Length: 240
Image 1 (tube, rainbow, N blue to C red):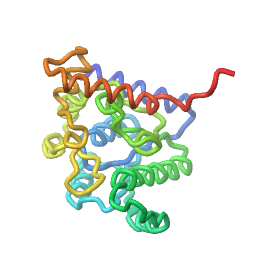
Image 2: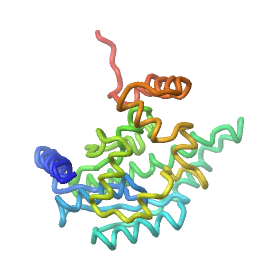
Image 3: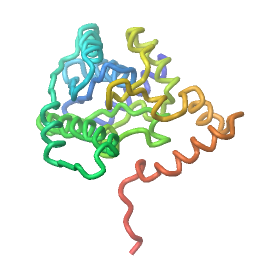
C-alpha cells in the first residue's frame, strides 16, 4: 500500500504540474471514495487542496461524516448547498407529463449541479477537479455523465472498490466511513448495490477474473459494461 500511495501521489502531482494548475479540489460526500481522494490530495497539496461539500437535499449524517473527516485531516473546505437551485430547476422544467417516471432523470440533476459548482471554483482558483470514481463503477457506467463523471483526473479510477477500501484503511480513513453502505445520495434510502442490482464482491471478482459461477450475474455485468461504453469515451465523431 505504501508503494501504491506514493505512485498515485506522484501521478497526481505530475498531472497538476503539467496542467500548470495551482492545486486540486474535490467534492466530499462523506463516503469512502471521496474520503480516499481527499486524503491523497491533502498529502500532496497541504496548502492547495480544497474540499467542497455540496448538499442537495442530502442526509445530515453524510454531511456530519464529511465534516468530521475534514477536521481529522485538517482540510480546507467550503459548503455550498444547491438544494434551492435544484428545486427551482425542477420547478422550471415543470414536466407533469408521465409524472413519477423520471426519478432517475431528476436525481441525475444533483451530481450535474455539483459538477458545475466544482468547476466554478476550479476555474476561479486554477485548480484541477479530482474525480472520485473507482474502476468498479466506471466499468459498468455507474456514474452520471457530465455529473460526477466530470473531472480532470481520476486517481482511483484504476482501483476496484475492494482496493479502494484497503487503501482507505492504510490512509487512516475512519471506520464509520469505510463500513457505511456505499450510496450516491441520489434519494433517501438509496444504496449503490441495490440500484446496481449486483454486490461489489461479485462485480470486483468478475472485473478481476472475467468470470463468475453465477452466469446470470456475469451476463448482467457484461451487459452494463457494453451499454455504458459511451460514458467512458469523449463524444464520437464520424470518420469523415
